Length: 273
Ligand SMILES: C[S@@+](CC[C@H](N)C(=O)[O-])C[C@H]1O[C@@H](n2cnc3c(N)ncnc32)[C@H](O)[C@@H]1O
Image 1 (tube, rainbow, N blue to C red):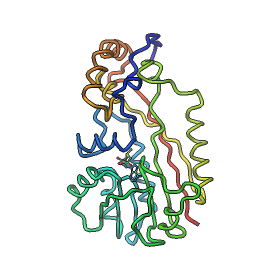
Image 2: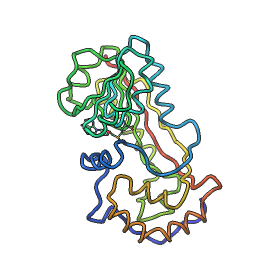
Image 3: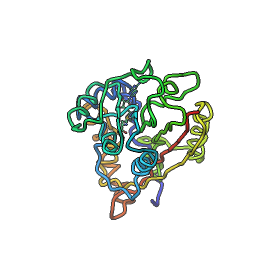
Image 4: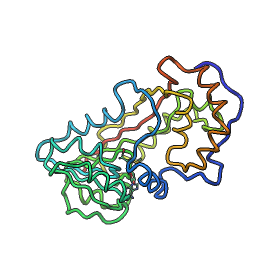
């Protein structure tokens, strides 16, 4: 990406219609609109994708006697990948619309999807799971919270994959629409993982920062990404305010595959003592 564009674009986050992402109302809207937690923009990825690295890590801890918990499973697409490898997989999520989509797509007896608030008491026996993972959902191993420890076996593995934001030049190209990261953004994500594991009472196994390369296919995809989960009224405003500028910047900087961006992910693994 070459030039820096000094023009400050419209900031949808300052509009009263903006719904803060990753809140219950935002997830409920997504469930009503699409039935799932699926990225709506078009793009291509360089391999390996962060999700694939995470899936391989999870698989490396599984056997046919394993019991697995997916915390914040969304519409369950990722969860189902482990069904044929293990004794039991349970996906839990707060949002009923996601769980009903997950149940519809599931055809495997070893999987169960349940509406559960992971911040409350979990409906599972003590020492039940060999692997407890979350892909961008609630982390059960916060300081002073016992439920995660109660349901995982001693020696069991707790794993998390979190999205640490997108940049790779995107934020400087579209100021206003995107807020710049600090120069030490990656270091901050890493320190946050170290802190989470340190406070978790889990024994640290691994922390990995994954830089995933993605190519956004068109200028509209820059806006679709920003407005993921927002209502139609706000999207119309954003398109009207930004599309011409975004098109100009996009075509000046895109590669033949699209506009290159980097998604930062943190992967952390701990062992229950
Ligand atoms: C970013 S989405 C990820 C969904 C899915 N794991 C994926 O990667 O596609 C986070 C998920 O966590 C769920 N979630 C958030 N808070 C929760 C809670 N307290 N209990 C259960 N699920 C929760 C949301 O409903 C949402 O489905």
